[in-house]
Image (cartoon, rainbow, N blue to C red; front, side, top):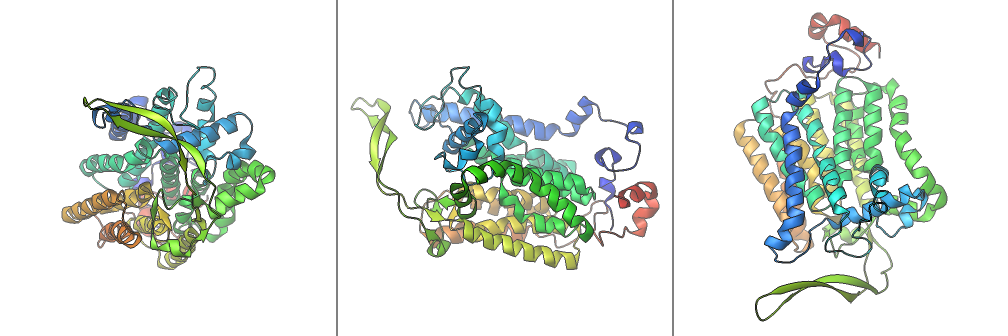
Length: 475
């Protein structure tokens, strides 16, 4: 295998036999300097996200209410259950949790501060000014900005210049911003961040680190399972049992109590993943999705805005009866994407592509989820677009601009409510087009990053760094 010179930094290889105590360490100021733009962009996400939630409703909609992402409050209630020692019941907590409970465990300490500090949360009823948002808002937005650091590291690993990375980090921040500021799903950004760290560890042949990061990523969002077949194409076959075992440990530990205490609701949420096509965006795959029995009529509190004759407005919470809610099983169609990702991994084992093209295949694998999903939500586009942007920034400027333009179009039309076919063709079609345009047609001008056999380093790299490669090969 040809190991990239850009990755042969012994400070980043914890499994190297080199004496770590004799290697130079980055000081805090050096660390900040090397990651200044992801830090600044993360701070921008926090500031703009809080400004949007506190002031957009007042200044734009003229309604005295905060715009907090609704989904984060149900996740925050799951965090309460974890903090109360009732993790086994989180899939019966009526919060709609359909992912692994990693995010609930992470937010549990913050949830336990609500009662001592006498804060209010917008669950189970909507609150115009939930005081818990003063704590939860900044934390959730910070978790959303976390993904910028591994994405920037991946761009650096692929040899993208610092000037281009400056532009790239702001585009990545723009793509990640709605995921947390509008939708309230930091588990998606965390999972992608950890998966990218796992991919980087795979490039460095650090199998233990790769398994550790991938395992944590799956515990937050099993969506990243689509990346694993691509990553396993780089891992020697004899290492597969070890890496697989490490990956499964976090999820097994987190799901053990729910599966033992509430087997039925837990397996229903994980494998069938109920979703509401009337609330989100239905696609043509809805015709093949299993329909659940409609739920009965319930009473909900709806925020309504009233306008008086003098021009003044007022918003109040009023009870309103809702009709039957139709749920469909979105999980089985998503399994098609996983099967195709495995087929893609088998293909890559035989082809041994360059690192640049392999990262592009990661974007392809992540886009499969949207291609075969019966119910889409706009933030589902984030993972594939985030990786496609990195690959696109290695191409000529006009192709980079095309990917950015098509990605922006995809993001915009994903919020439209229209017919199933029209929405699917516009949103998924533009996503596929953005990924295809990002395909690296030529080897970019970058450090040596080609990948050959996982067990055979090239003669060129052996001559330049023989000692370090010997230590890597012994892993």
